Amino acid sequence: MIIIAGHELVDADERDAFVAAFRGLVARARATDGCLHVAITADSVDPERVNVVEVWRDADALNAWRRRARGPKSARPTRVDIKRYDATAGAPLS
Image (cartoon, rainbow, N blue to C red):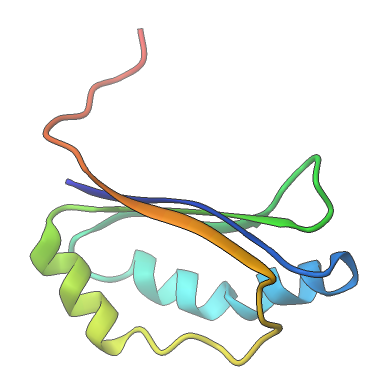
């Protein structure tokens, strides 16, 4: 399982439009074989922060998606802090 998680910062007055620009990309990703979860959302506390979370079945599914993802034209983030994590298992919270 591959997890992509982190955040981007954009100008507060552009954040909502930035998130909205990714709506189609998120919908397409969620419909892609091997996608377990994708979300690009406005942070509930920081008006400049956009949270990014992706969960993929495996590296092959992620790489296939990346080859055809084609992100939208949007505002450029002022900071990006997104990392890839390789997970070996997942379980329900107890």
